[in-house]
Length: 351
Image 1 (cartoon, rainbow, N blue to C red):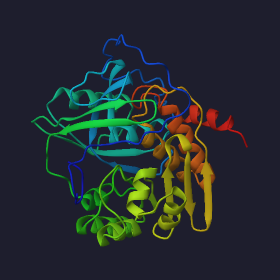
Image 2: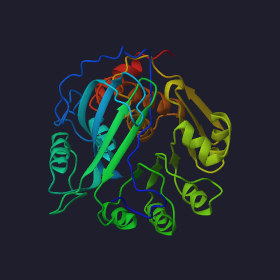
Image 3: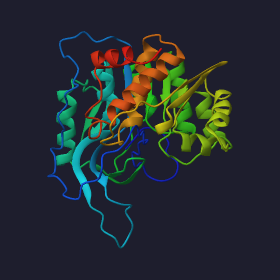
C-alpha cells in the first residue's frame, strides 16, 4: 500500500485531533448522509500559476466516514447517536489537496482500483487539479475506508484497507526528483534508509509525520530514519512515546538533537517547534469545531507551505496553526484553505 518498509500493524491512516474553541451541542436527530465529496469552497484557482518547489506526497487515499457531535462515548454493548454524518476524501489526499490549494506543484503517489471509493477520491483529486503522474490504477478494488468518530476533544478511528504491493520509495524519488518528499507516517528500516539516502543525493528535503505508529528512539532503525529527515512533526502523544519523555517541552529538546526541525502538534494547546537553537510556540485559535479529522494533516500543509516560501520557524508554526484551525470548521478536510484564505487569516493574527 505505502512505500518502504512498514513495521507493526497495518496502516490505518490516523490523523491528529486539533480541537479549538467551544464545541456545538450534540444533536440526537442525525442529519442525512452528505455527499462523498463535500463542497470544496477553498479550491485552488486553476488559472493561477503554480509556485514550483515540486512536492512528492507518498501515501494512500482514505475515504473517511465521519460521525460528528457524538452524544456520548462509544463502547461495545451500547448505541450512541451522532449529530452529523459525512463521507469525505482523506488520508494522503488531504496533504496533496491542501498543498495544491495553496498553489504548490504537487505529485501524489497513490493507488486506485475499480471500487466506488477509488472512483470518488480520484474524481475529487482531479477536481482539485492534482498532478496524476503518480497515480497507479488497478483492475481490482483498492478500498481504504476509515470510520472516524469525531468528538469535540478527540477522535477514534476504525479502518480497512485492501492490500496491494507497495512501490519502492527510492524508485518514486528517482522518478519524480522532487524538492520535498512528504511522508504521512513514521517509516523506518533498511529500504526506507536507502530511499532517504536517495532523497539526500538529489537534494530533496523529507517531511515526515508519525501518525500513531509504534516506534521509539531506542530502536536503531527509528533513530537512523529520523536522522535522515529534515522535518519531523508528530503530535504530542506520539512525541512523548517516541522520546520516552513526560512533557512536550522535554520531547522537543530530545527531538531537536535528532532532526534539524522538530515540530510537536498539541491540539487545543497549539504547537511548538525547534530548529537548531531556535524555539517557537503558537497557541491554538478559537474556532467552532465541526470535525477534527483532517486538522493534523492541514497543519503539516501550512507549515511546509510557509517553509517553502522561506518563512521563519515562527511563521511556519503560524501557517500550520491557521491551516489546522480552518480544517476543523468543516467535515474532513473540506475547509482546507487556499492561498488567499491563508494570507487573510495570517494577517489577522495578533503580532
